[in-house]
Length: 192
Image (tube, rainbow, N blue to C red; front, side, top):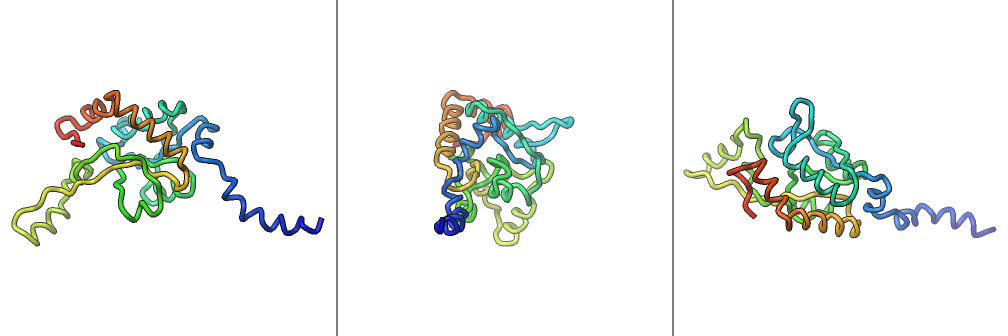
């Protein structure tokens, strides 16, 4: 009996060790919670109130491969990554580039696209700030820098990472990813 108060004090310290793996949570719910902003065609946007775009279809394919349904949650840029970090969302599929800062906070899937930053800019508005800065510093603007877009999720979930990687590899291997790229990007389709 005298060990009980000591044990109760230790429980909060042990609870992170007892936390279920993210893939178990996804399977128990039967859904993959996918955060996105729905404001950047052709990646993800609303067309007549319906979510659509390259990343929406990719998210649906990934959820199908994981044998769960896709639950898309439209959010803003402030909540997007914070929600993934807190567990509110399982993943964010929102043309997120792997950066050293983000790699410190999240684990990532392998890249699903290697592209340039100009493709990510909204088509209606050219990336003037990049061109303006370059024109002030040199005579010819450089080509847009290459970026690798990947899917962030909470750190420390190796089984989820393996499941996500396997799903993504199947989508790449059977040509569905390439077909999706051609559908949404056409002649501008990113080159690996």
